[in-house]
Length: 362
Image (cartoon, rainbow, N blue to C red; front, side):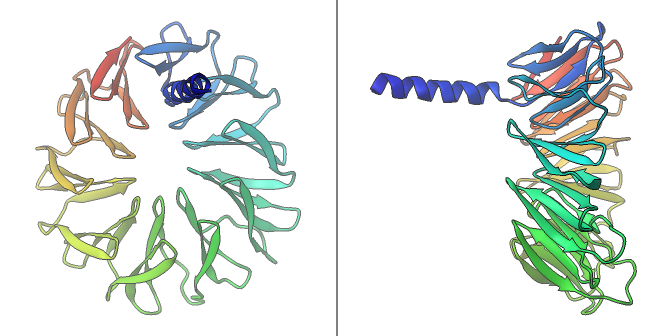
């Protein structure tokens, strides 16, 4: 019995080690590969038509147009019919005509036979169902009807990774979060209310109370007593710029000032805030403010708690877990972030992967 328990434990651990997600690339031979356990492993040896990837899966159309999926462990045939498809870090949604299907954690299912528009986010699929003129969402193994409309269907006003804002049949703004629906308000004379939705929190200027408000874990809070100039939501926090140009950070009912020097630009995604002050580039992540560079990058990408950016020579640097890495100084290299890993594609179709502080090259 003890031996069986140990074997089962080792099997589960082994499965978790294998299921490290995907880093898909197309090499100089047109082979379709994914980086795993320090090596690039083959997915397809024949050229593919296209692919879309998240942290945990990659969906692609092979040379015959068949839709397939690879989750870091196995390759699965999805359909040999013409499809529209989208992926997130965890889900695949695809339409065959008006039929909307999905893949979630190894299981295929049909959401509706009367779909029109749809959107795939982190753990959520939002879609229009023309049969009963409804807006629906799939979240954590269940499908929810958000609203039945007596007018033309329209997708939600703002959609984040795990929550969304929509208008019901009476023009009432509502929030869907964690399987429940929360009412916001009706603003009949306001045509352009701007909601910014992050991973699990949203913020907006309330036109009735003239306050800056957030929706956080099932409740609404007034953060400031005046509307803010600009605001953006991340994962569990909100960043906003006041009328004086100061940058503020709100989380768990408390706010503090990130910068009072009049930022030139700033951005928020997932767990990271970035901004520039007099050409200095800063980041705030996991409670720490870091000067990333003494120049403003031409471009950058943020995902989870990883920042990758164009260095001053045109190559690629990264900032992960409080550590800075120089990946390449070759100009015009492309780069992507998958989970906590950074992929750099060089001009000759060779690759660099930053994983757990180590750099791997093919």
